[in-house]
Amino acid sequence: MNPRLRWKTRAFAAIVILSNAFGNLSLTWGLRHGAEELTASPVSFLRAIIGPWVSLGICLLIAWMISRMFLLSWADLSYVLPVTAFGYVLNALFGRLFLGEQITPARWSGTLLIMAGVILVGLGNPHSEGHTGESS
Image 1 (spheres, rainbow, N blue to C red):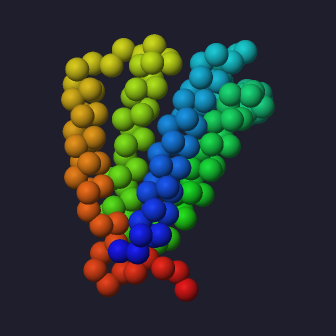
Image 2: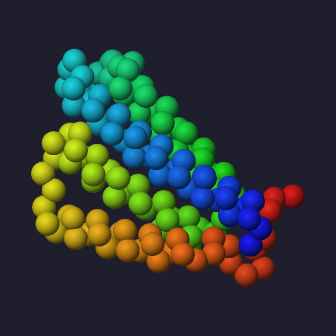
């Protein structure tokens, strides 16, 4: 595999993982610490959206989607989804560290299984045979 493409794939995977985890953290923080609780009213959602933490979370999640689209344009889906699942691990850690969430042993066990899967898939090639990953 082309070293430049391998580096680009790893860089975009990191961007996807971090923008998702920090986006979810910001969104959750803003919704839990906002001025008012969300209701079914569209006005309630609009007020939440203009809050700084929710706005940051939305922007980061837009960056997540765009970077994920780029990554999927050259790397295999069967590589991208498991590798970027490391974001779930970060979400659990962020929930515990920053939001004070209590995580049961069963959830930690599931998180460790996700990490094991990420490591196994990450050791492999992000492109199947015959797939160059280069766009024309």
